[in-house]
Amino acid sequence: MKRKIVYWASTTIVSLMLLGSLSYLTGSDQVVSGFARAGYPQHLRIVLGIAKPVAAIVLLLPGLALLKEWAYAGVAFALTMAFISAMASGEPMQTLVLPPILLGLLVVSYATRPASRRLTLHGASVR
Image (cartoon, rainbow, N blue to C red; front, side, top):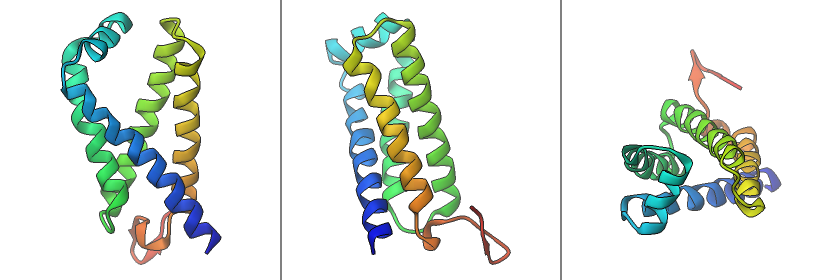
């Protein structure tokens, strides 16, 4: 039971943060200037504004084991790059700590996911 609580708590927190990326699609001055300040093209903002919420939904839905593996990998990559980008562009400390915390929660979610949410090959669960 404890494992299930840890899984759902970590997955929900990560998913809620990913759903917040819908704000990338608003075109608000803060979001646009943040991407510009980091030196990223604005079309990346659109791609991430779609991909991160889709990953959040995939992580929360039952089934879709192969898509879940891709979602975990994509989110891990995005969080790692967000941390590197924040470090390289001299962002304040509060911006630097969020990606590693979320990455840690993502790892907890991945490690504690139930067998029904794991990719299986020929009847065996892949770890």
